[in-house]
Image (cartoon, rainbow, N blue to C red; front, side, top):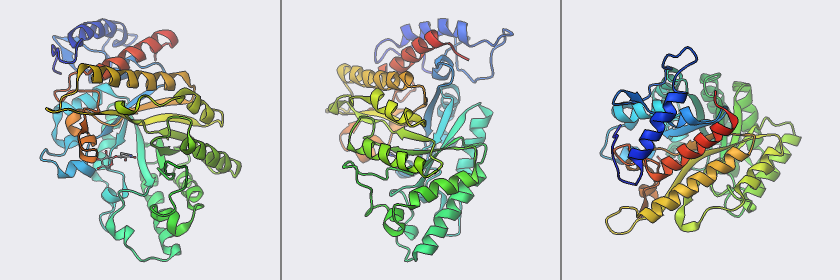
Length: 385
Ligand code: XIL
């Protein structure tokens, strides 16, 4: 870890604080250091996000690989970047494969399943005492061309989805504890994506309930989620989810959670009513989660964020975490990768970037410190493991 780095403000001071905190939290009851691979700085352990989280809250990250990473000059982050792997192991208690469980990645051809990279992530998570979120089974994006262009009848297409879900969820039964079964099925107007979602277009809206039933058959212990962006607030999109989930539950469909992705941008201001929105889903008796948090910003010439932008980014992180902490069923809080050089943002949103919580040398940005402070305060109130 790049201890002593001062960019972004208070890293040295915060390092001293977390070293003090580590004295209270990093030892087990018999006084020995726990098994977490916590980086050492001058021989002293540093308390990471997972160490300061209150009991029952998983703090996660996406695991970089596949998707946009394939077009970059750097090698596969998860297998080739040791500092990245060490940090992933030390900092987080939950991992989400960023692309390695998507159709495009898993199914390059109709008869092939490429499980190696996802297997490696699940093994890594088990070695480091981490949970895994599976992402995603039914989505309108990142489907292989052969699938999008296949001229199949409804029965065959349905069979393909059923077989995919049975195979993938079944393979990781008992090891992947949460699945995003249906991802981004509504648009921002709260309409089902009946055109651009292959499954909904060809098989009709009832395929959503079927996907949940098939996933449940394959792993009755897994928590099954719907998940979307721009659904943090009370708005037409989140309300459409609320109505759908209410109907699914009334029909006995095994739906267990709703994930708000949390792809935010400081230029839009913080979304309103996040806590109240999460409470609406809590009221249905299902879990909630923040699944893909990053906070992007428009970068000026030179591509460096200003201190003011970083402060606003930190504030958004703090507020989203506080909303999750305030709601009983919100027990999983995941950032969408780190550091900035591995982020998907610059590749999808021109001129924008700096969206993650760590600098490229893995030093903490103010947003990291905001999460650390907020978790520590919550733990002090409610207790840790
Ligand atoms: C993104 C990945 O981060 C990129 O690597 C990939 O090229 C495209 O997808 N919502 C989701 C995620 O549910 O799967 C997306 O991840 C970001 C938006």
